[in-house]
Length: 433
View (cartoon, rainbow, N blue to C red):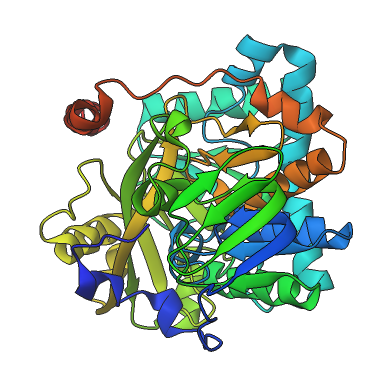
């Protein structure tokens, strides 16, 4: 979802400026039928469409705006293993065996992303390497504990370093500890998403842009209605996340309270000296700290610093956004102080209450995929595969996620935003202290 009140901000995305989109697909203007109707042409919807088309299903995708105009085309581009919640919800609710299966599937998500890039020749600036950093002694101990737990419980190892050794991975005075792993990494998300759309179309998938679903009639056959047409299908997949709540709030009201739109923002600098990029982040990894309200950043293929992390739970863009983000960037990399900022953009990501993904069924033939909570670049591909498996009759893997219990955000539609604003103020103060 975009920040609708900030037109100028929405138009200043580095990602949009660095791609050449295809001509806008015509909106749906007829009553048609298909085997499967997918609502949402972001990573999750396109991935589901590809998986289903590969299995021989006739698929129609309805997109409210443009392909990947929401979080899929505006995010930090970090392709990360695991889940924003960590493994705790899986372990506590489902047990060790299911938690192990969920972890293995998160590794599969990265492999699947790389397979699709290779198979469909998607040029999206893919880079391997991910760095988790800590800025205080307390945060360093938490990071070390996480690294040890993942190695002991799941056999996944990271290179953990402290003190002067941190400079092997990042040249910043801000961090006292770091953990590096080679499976995660980063990419240009909009190039990747547009590549998925081309792949889906090559398999016969029909994609209609500017076609928000206004009503969904349930039953043995589903009927998804738009302003000028409809799709009748045996199966349906809701993959609109935050945008579904904006464009079709009555389509799935029973799950809308289980996710919350959170605004996140990124600045993109002018290109800097490639030698400086290599000195600041040797190996060109993607970086994220372990604060509750975190900073994440990386260098683009054309040597711009893309620095993100300022968040808003109020749906309003923070004041002095460019200035605030530039100052945070300079705190991490003093050598970038004064570098001009050419792009400032933002958008909403969907988070669940416990930050675990929320996948499941609304009816026997209607599925939903939401709650990626900032880990959607890789996890959406897995989600698309799992729902396609279920449509084809193999539901075991999707059921691991559908068994997770998710609570609605407290306060209802009117009070949950003020409650979260207060909660984030507390966590921001806690991180600062």
